[in-house]
Image 1 (cartoon, helix red, strand yellow):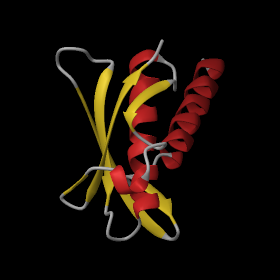
Image 2 (image 1 turned 180 degrees about the horizontal axis):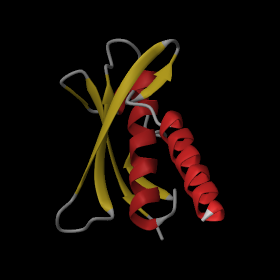
Image 3 (image 1 turned 180 degrees about the vertical axis):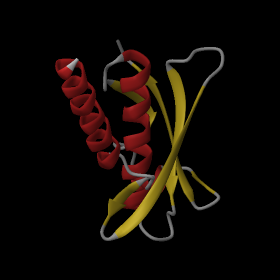
Image 4 (image 1 turned 30 degrees about the vertical axis):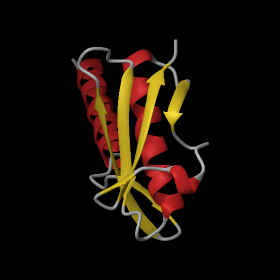
Length: 112
């Protein structure tokens, strides 16, 4: 009985500490500004995705970092790897990056 109680208390403490590490804050911080990112996978081929980040008006670099981060998180959760073949991404010259509604748009494919 005592060991069971100690185990339950320990598990509860670990759970609470894990939740404390979680944050409701979304996005990434770059230069003191928070940039949010979104990702959407293709229904036909889930390895293909589009990720966005913004606001570009605050910083194209910060928006690009948010879009790259979202793509990386998506591939990690989908395939367990951070390898991405970017069609439009971090290596694309800034002047050629598509901007839609104050958000930079990346396109990539998760690579196994």
